[in-house]
Amino acid sequence: MATIPILIGACLLFMSLYLTLLLRPKSIKIPIKNRHVFITGGSSGIGLSIAHQATSEGARVTILARDPNKLQEARDSIRLSTGVNVNIAIADVRDFETLKAVVDEADPIDVLVCNQGVYFAGELEFQEMENVKMMVDVNLMGTLNLIKAALPKMKKNRRTRGPASIALMSSQAGQCGVYGYTTYSATKFALRGLGEALQMELISDDIHVSLIFPPDTATPGLIEEKKRRPRVTKKIAACSSSLTADEVARKTLNGIKSGTFLVSCNFLGFFMCLGAADFAPQRSILTAFTEIFAAGIIRFYAFALLWRFYEVTSRCNTNSSHKKEDGMMKNGSKLM
Ligand SMILES: NC(=O)C1=CN([C@@H]2O[C@H](COP(=O)(O)OP(=O)(O)OC[C@H]3O[C@@H](n4cnc5c(N)ncnc54)[C@H](OP(=O)(O)O)[C@@H]3O)[C@@H](O)[C@H]2O)C=CC1
Ligand SMILES: CCCCCCCCCCCCCCCC(=O)[C@@H](N)CO
Image (cartoon, rainbow, N blue to C red; front, side, top):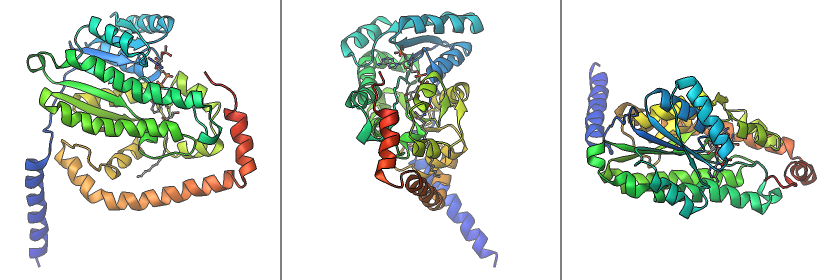
């Protein structure tokens, strides 16, 4: 009778040995101290918290955004809490030429945090095309522009400068399509494909990609967005516990330092990453193991959540005029 546990044990041992040989890329540590960390959207919310924490860990930090006044305020607040001055870069990520000039002028980057992002909630049917375009241009095209602008100098002498990182700020709405985030979810899902392909392209240059998936996070941007959220979106987003910008910044920096590809930020997020691992690179044998065994159960749980999301949708939008009223009221006006 003792043969069954022995067989199971042998199987698990074989699997871990196999995974040890199989897992790519190999595990890595990416230091932050004394390195140049370049954070877009670093003048507000999550980006500002990352800038604070990276500075207090001894990184040389540059923050990039459009509004020079907000950047100056951010710089002052970081100096006040850490005694250190961060560098400021002014550019719109949609403008490749300016972005390229700004990045070329800065010191070579070791850790690039592509965090800039805009979000307007609302059904596609009622959303201004201007806002749809803005989300695609800033969240997706802006990130492509940024990586394209930064790569040549990031790659230069990389072997002597140690491993580098590119972190992409996605969202839990980039793992699960959410009512009211048609465009936003599309831009954030796109970063996943971008990240998977980019990691393959850059692994031989010792550049490591991390994707961050925060839930609702208390930031100035979120306060504005919440004013116009459809009721259904509010209810679905409330399923995942919200965080502070400092908490998300901590998860982001830890994810970068450990070279983790899928970085979750809260309890539910951890299970979302396990359940949606697909073709994400995995460096940790323990997590790889958990992914293999948790996938089925998580899918089962996802069905229960989906049932709830569809229940909420049909309760809130019992007839299309109801939905339209809500949608027109919240999204009919120009937002930016
Ligand atoms: N807060 C949340 O609930 C969540 C946020 N996220 C993601 O985290 C990231 C940060 O969000 P959050 O901190 O809330 O955002 P905020 O709105 O608080 O800050 C956005 C930052 O991005 C900058 N920015 C916006 N547009 C551009 C642009 N075109 N070019 C350069 N910089 C730009 C802003 O500065 P300026 O306007 O001066 O350019 C600002 O510094 C986003 O990618 C967002 O999608 C993900 C999940 C949850
Ligand atoms: C195990 C399987 C679990 C599946 C869980 C699904 C939970 C869905 C929660 C979606 C939350 C969306 C937050 C968006 C945050 C964001 O980016 C916005 N703040 C921007 O406005």
